[in-house]
Length: 153
Image 1 (tube, rainbow, N blue to C red):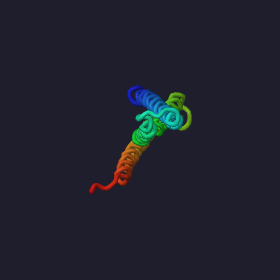
Image 2 (image 1 turned 60 degrees about the vertical axis):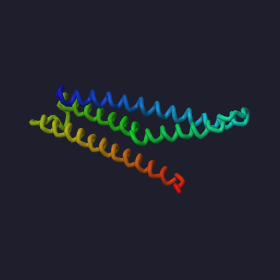
Image 3 (image 1 turned 120 degrees about the horizontal axis):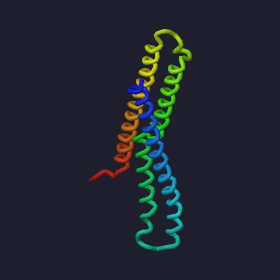
Image 4 (image 1 turned 30 degrees about the horizontal axis):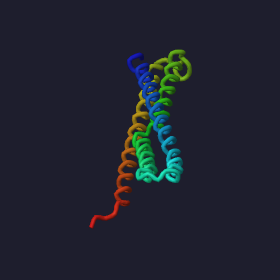
C-alpha cells in the first residue's frame, strides 16, 4: 500500500501545492499589472516624456501574456483536481485501514485496489483533458492575434 497509495497521496499533495502557488502568483501579477494600467494613464497626463505613451500598451501586453499562461497551463484546475484526488485517495485508504464499508467484506483488498486505480485513472483523464484544452486555447489565441495583424502588401 505504501508504494502505491501513500506515494500517490504525497505526489498529488505536492503537485496541488505547486499549482496553487503558481496560480496565485500569476493572478497576483495580473491584478497588479492591470491596476498599473490605470495609473499609467495618470502618469501620461502628468509627465510628457516620450516613453510614457508606451507604458499602458506594455502593461496590457504583460496582462495578456499572464492570462495566456494561466489558460495554457491550467494551474487552478490542476490545483483543485490534484487536491480532490489526494483527498479521495486518503479517504479510501482510511476506509480500508479501518475496515469500514465497503471494505468490511472478505476480499476487500481487491475492491480497494480497483477503487484506487479508478481514482487515478480518472485523474489522468482530467489531466490530459486540461492539457489538450490548454494547448487548443493557446493555438486559438495565436490564430486570433494573426488575424489582427495587417496584411502585408
